Length: 197
Length: 192
Image (spheres, one colour):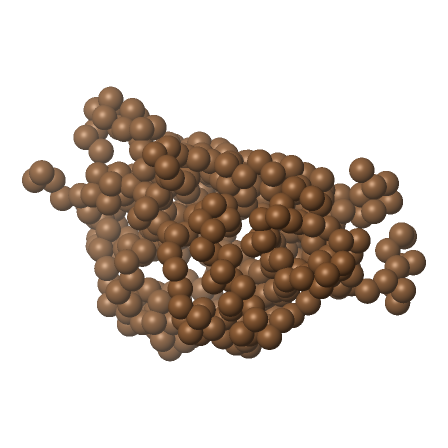
């Protein structure tokens, strides 16, 4: 099996363009606040109402990730470029359902000059590997907004299969948009490792 | 405007006191199938006390994004389950439906479909939502048929989402839009 040859020789957290790290809370909170000011970025992340948070509020909100239940159901990382070690976004697995072996993945690149250059796809490949060979999950799911075709393409490259749509779920800018649902099964991911697309 | 929108043909929607509802969940959770049809959570027989404290914090706290009802049979006013609209995103006018009937003897008799019709009417004519979503497990054929009867459309599925009884099962996504509901029920005879 291809992945066993990577054991002990490749860091789970190092890709080809990015690495997964944890930054100090202050650094992370400041970055999130800065990124959220870009409402195009913010409104592609999810369907939440766009708003502005203070640094303090953001740090309080981040605190809940340190609670015991979160530590076993949520695995969040920051994304740094390998070249400059620059913090450009986040990626993580959440809502882990251990009995079923499945979880949700979320990703966002707050620094828009890194969009469309493979950084997101590289981070996604790292988190999928983490999910399938470290957490031993069987399935990873995601939702993505219809008005984010760059992300949809990136997820397809990473191996996600379209599975459905929540029709007319989101109301923004005077029209309704679908939310696409995608998923990748462990067998599908393993097959990709053996024969990369 | 004079119709009781909480009263259906077989059931009514009410809200029981936390103690009453918790006692019912304690009884219903003795049947693992009630729990395994309802949720992905690991089934555990719940004590009334544990359920009640959870309920008081989560279900009975005043939350702007949750509308929860218990379900009573019209014929004997017996508490048979609960139904809710949860995660309401007001800006988008959408919410998730959840329903569970606690006892096997009440399954397959139309109570669930009746309750679902009531909550859809509530959603589309009182909350004025635009869309209701739900998830249902592939092994819950009875519920899938009930939702289809109530007007939900299949929208896809999370393949092999669940692992139970040595098999992986899909979790099915369904949704109904307000214009679909209007077409279905305004043209119908019932007045729902």
